[in-house]
Amino acid sequence: MASYTGSCNCGSVTVTLATAPSMTYACHCLNCRRAGGPFSMNYILGEDEVTVHDSKNSRKQYIDTNTISKATVKVRVL
Image 1: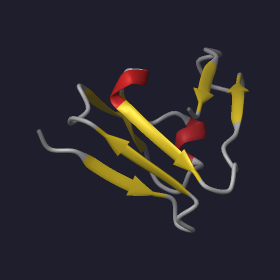
Image 2: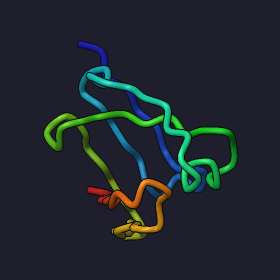
Image 3: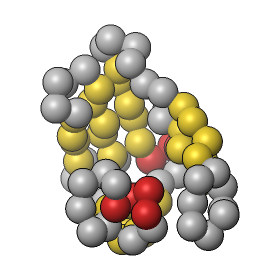
Image 4: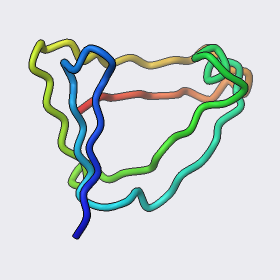
């Protein structure tokens, strides 16, 4: 079984996926476009499918309600 690994630019946070994401989608909402392009790519994963290592304890959690659709976007970094 193949695994996939990535990290943030400074290397403090690394992410390992046991398998390929089951779902991938592009979001074009205003908040995602603010991330630096016309859209952002997102992966749908179960908590048991991803391992996050944070050597500097720099992970954050937030709830973003400032969306065009008025839907609440919850982002939780494991």
